[in-house]
Length: 173
Length: 165
Image 1 (cartoon, rainbow over the protein chains, first blue to last red):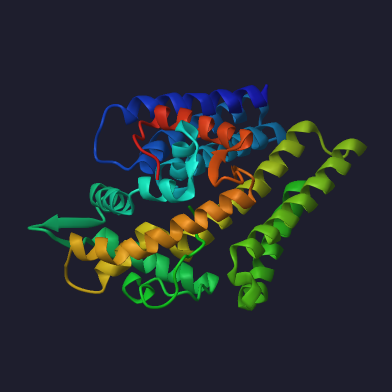
Image 2: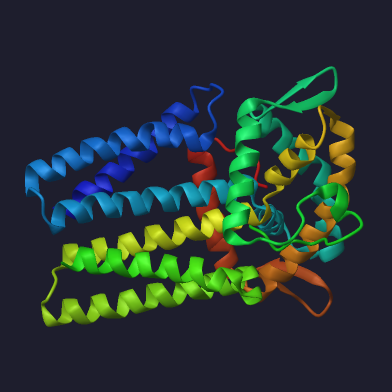
């Protein structure tokens, strides 16, 4: 029964997110999922506690729900941002040579999409052809600097430097 | 009790990383981090299976414990990879270096990186057996790759993502 609760909660979160995603708005896809996922988690936790009291069943119901949600977030961000995923989707349409595949995937379009996502997410602003960081973008850069310091990432991220130095980072697709 | 034990294991795993492993050069590579967490998950899985088989814990506790370990590892790996250098982060850093920058400058900076990224991705996909290259040079998606892409396509339709990558 706890598992049914967990799976039903996840299905509800996915359906609600699909509805909200079609309503438009400037909220990023991850934030929009969190916007439905967190309230569903609260309701699920309350239901689980009411049905099972504080027990392995109620804790498991919430944890399995959270695990499913995190997997879903991982998969749709992979689909939205993954260079590998885009390459595989092109190959699904038709097999081709490696050179043709590389030519068909526009790096320019990929970067343009990312710039547009960052703008719609409120991290960048573009005026008269000039792009600048908004406060949210600066906060994100600071947060990532902290994270890079914590993980001891050594590789330079400056894409201006990377033209002459390292290239071909093996980060997430 | 089992929740406390797992919480203690996770805390020790994190502390070991902070105190020792993150300073090692080998842990700068994604592969090492994945193995570090993969081994931890395998260890927890083995203990949970044995405990469940012995009747020490029930099905709910088994699932919950594995879900907790999974949440910890996936969150860690996601954060590690994002901090290592997502494309969006690189763009933000580029913009942060000056008061403003033109779109064309960013695009020009990224072009060379994009080409390298594609080549690396093809190589990674082959090593994961998601694609295969025929002797005549034709690259095809494998059955496993097709399953993954079909799942992601369904998710894209649900979340109204128009284009991958």
